[in-house]
Image (cartoon, rainbow, N blue to C red; front, side, top):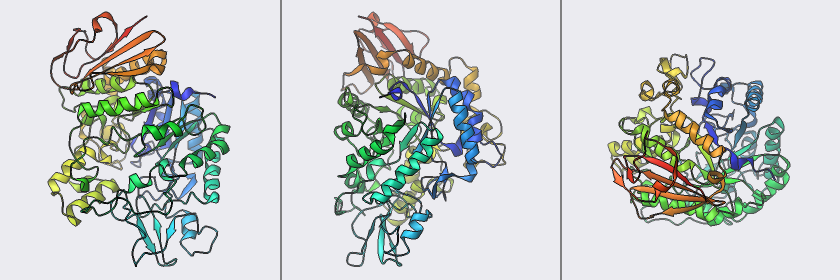
Length: 557
């Protein structure tokens, strides 16, 4: 079994925000191809594209109407084939986003399914009869409101864990599973190198679709926790592997909200019978608001002790049994430096390098989200009209206008901190018009004004930039089995200022020390006996640890 995924660093591209080539204001496949030299210079091994399939774009491509067609705004199938070939020629691989928990309501399967209870597609989705004149259970959608929508033609409700326009597929139907395996083969036969699988641990719903636990003042039950890791998930993933994945040399990563290490050990076991790794959410769900009705919406800072506990638990539980994915942010999370470091001008660059080092020195496959290597920050919008993301907009109207449990100004502060739109502003290539993203009059989405100070051109001209620091981290990983495979030991778990840990492999030890504060500190980990491998200051002061300083030492046998 080939395990190149363990040696790789992945770069995530949000296509509509990466590079526009045809002056329509939207990023596209040819634009990505034009930027391959930049990605090769960074040193990444794998490119992961968010969905590029034909879609009504209710949820920016995660509502798919045709899995075998390219969304016209991104280009053509010939454009995709050209991008794929040139990616391979540049020594990189390409992952597609596999979204098969749900489709668009414009997909032909659903268009047929909703017509009646008696047609070839009637059982392709999850339909249930009304209960006492209302929805079958108390499940809520991730995008606010109920998870059920009524269709008069069938006198039934269909389930949608996300938007009303994203009906959930019925994986209990063997025909549905075979349809999914067929579309996977379609792309793999074209030469793609694997899949990132969207909310893949939702595909097996609990038997009987029971009500979810519900707080007295909550509108709906705790749906995600109820739906995650259903009774047939292992069975479906093994079948997918046997019928498709095992027949290709691929990399797979499954997005799995609410999964725990104890579960993931099964899904990503090292025998290669299911997936290679998963995206867990525990570290990005930290900092929760005590008011559970607000769900993810909060602006509470993450306690370092909690962050250390979560990341360390995954490192320790999976070591020797499964494989970790390592990420700070993606298209669904706010910018990493704004959340885990600081976007203040004084320390932004130092903190961006610090959080990068902390993550890239762990065991697992690192993921870099577009612009992270530049230290791109949250956009900090100040009005709801500036938002584009359906989740953010729905949450605002649900919590501010409908339930009236949070003031508008406070909700805007939550969105400024946690909205997905923070990660979706166009890539900042230079100081020119529209940051070099597009020559159109306006980009599809508002630019972050920070492009005048934060952009790729300036980074590439500065040898001490965040970009070149990421490049160095990637080279270190490529050349070090200690970094790739060493085990992990957390030091001083209750230290709420410094994140320090050790990695050990074949008699060698790596010591990582990161200051998550703007304070001067002192810590003695015996670092002066080791050799400094990388750090974000120009000199090393031993036991003194300066604001947002990070440093890595190696000790040989």
